[in-house]
Length: 219
Image 1 (cartoon, rainbow, N blue to C red):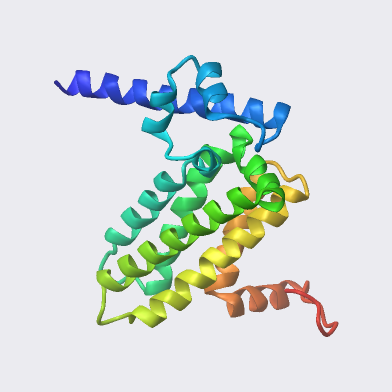
Image 2: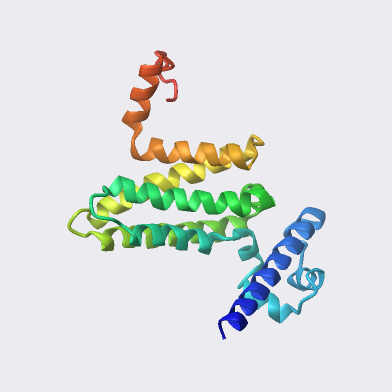
């Protein structure tokens, strides 16, 4: 039974990836708006019905592994160990999200396509904002629920908002300037540190003699 379930899951993942690959090719060739779901399904050699079993809308193809990334983050919060601070737990969750992106959407080129469409396609922009708000909400609730006596819902919202905001802004900038997957991952790791421990980053730069003294310069 387990072997059958495993085979079915592998087949499902393969079909999903085939749809993503086909969609990416067509989006690049024809443009997002001119690409039809029927064309994506045909290019992936599956039925239109199969497409909708994997993706509710064409825009959801662009979102990629967002649910997997969220699940990784939620799992990290659920594994909160005694002695860990709120910042450490949230850092672990954020790092899990970054590692997922580094393994999937960054090397496949889907993250770059997502950034491109985010700036040019309103329907994708709307869907991504909806997805971001859902991710933010679930992480806030998970963090608060894990230790309500330690972090209030408002505090969880502030922390999660700071980290996700830093990750999203950094990812867009890094991808737009042409960074490869490893460089994007490094930038995202630093963004997490800046969001959770900005003073420590400033202190380390001062110790190394690299801190700028010019007013208004970014850290």
